[in-house]
Amino acid sequence: MGWLHWERFLCGTDCAAEPRRCVSEQLFVEMADRMAAEGWRDAGYEFICIDDCWMAPTRDEQGRLRADPRRFPGGIRRLADYVHSKGLKLGIYSDVGNKTCAGFPGSYNYYDLDAQTFASWGVDLLKFDGCNSDSLELLAEGYRRMSLALNRTGRSIVYSCEWPFYLRPVQQPNYTEIKQYCNHWRNFYDVYDSWSSIKSILDWTALHQDTIVKIAGPGGWNDPDMLVIGNFGLSWDQSVTQMAMWAIMAAPLFMSNDLRHISPEAKCLLQNKEVIAINQDPLGKQGYQLIKDKNFQLWERPLSGRAYAVAVLNQQEIGGPQNFTFSLTFLGNGLACNPACSIRQVLPASRDWGVYSWISSLSVEVNPTGTVLLKVLPL
Image 1: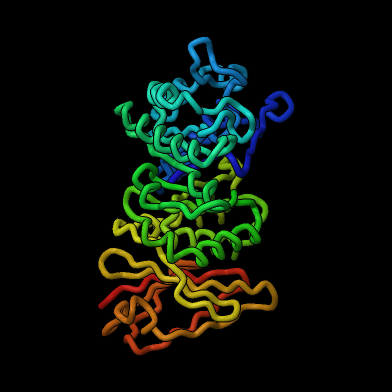
Image 2: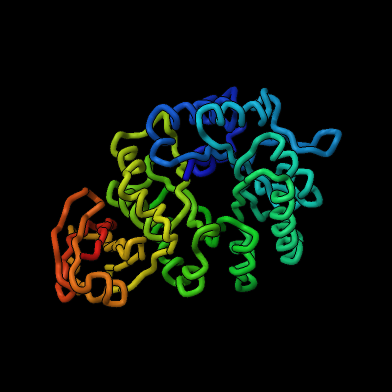
């Protein structure tokens, strides 16, 4: 869990013209201050991550990466020390190829040196992109080599990969191998601040769940990309849907928003302890779609203690709230509510629904593009 600059701040490098939107030391210091002071760290958001465009245009005389000296006057080591002083961890970005996606120096042929550099700076996470690699063989070799190089540093560094996303147009990824080397991995396009983007990520995940759900678990996760709650493109119901479904998918929760300007409602949703507890459940199983019926989808996720998280998603974009009724025998292969269970609604608002028997039916009213998230506890 953490915060990442990319979706909201992109490649802003003109600090003179746009000081509040510039990818700079100042931006990350201000976000770290907010994360420590306003409950984000205490809710579990511990990483503050730099994405592309942090670098100087060239490496130094020793071949090492360096931060842009105007935008990061103290270098990454000073920023890491500051972030750590707030009880947080620092993430950074590089690329497996010759150049990053934005055209800055990539790590190709520098894997060991870059890993040692990041470790010496006190970096805690590396997001490793896949642009500008000359072949799929070099791409795969680069991801493997950087994983081994990070391990050789002796520092604990989370390794976030884009490996399967760049493979997929050409070949089916070997997820067993990817999990051996990476801690989480992107499968699909960048998230945008829009409902169509969230919907496409959910549709892709459901379509491919037979290959991706089984590999997820402690140490390795499918990453559907950033939470865009608190920005401009999602309605309240769509924000609830993203939070609920990212919890069902056991997704890394990396926000990309401006914590200096975020509504109390968005903050409350992103810091919701019950949803975060589902997302971070120690059993570590990813959820999946059980039923698709017209515009409704029913998803479940097994949780520790024989509990289940259940999401009812209404993808209809016209009209008003609609009811979806289903039998509790659908859940957990018929075992989730056998012989009885208590059901608690977590989103859009928290309330107890009471006790049900395993042959009961449940009727759930869901707003257009909204989701109702439930927790089912065995009795």
